[in-house]
Image (cartoon, rainbow, N blue to C red; front, side, top):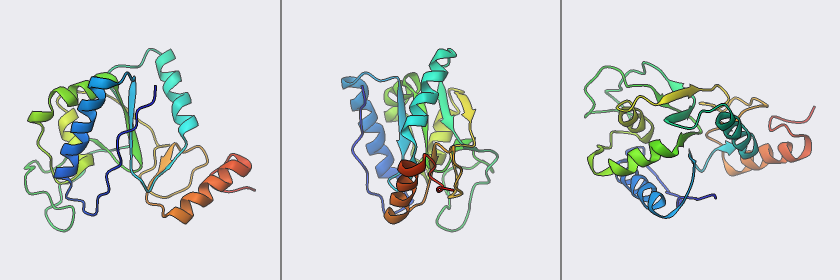
Length: 186
């Protein structure tokens, strides 16, 4: 069964109120829906959902379905002290690893942990780093996969890539439909 959280329209990278809404929506999903994994993405991202679903099926066949956090991760990322990414509340010099770019998948038990601890979770400067800080407490099984893009480089086998405007997304999908390659037909 698929469950889609309502989209959030965010105009700022200071995401504390939106994060609490996301966690609240996750809590409601936990109460009303059955699912095994939750995919988080942004509205400006290309997603190859068929590849993602196939890989999730393979993970389950391989016995990997608990404490999963699958995406592309930033490691030892310095905490910014100036600019739009400035973090005033997290005092360590680097963040715990966190997923970047176009999205990630977490397993049901991770979602349940987030939902059951929602009242205790502090929203830091950005959603991605907040998830990294929160989930470092439970030591998830990180699947660091380069096919979850952190930038707009086009890779034929990518699961996801961020930061596209609507015409660019339409072009990626047009290529995908025409020749099964979002990067273009040769």
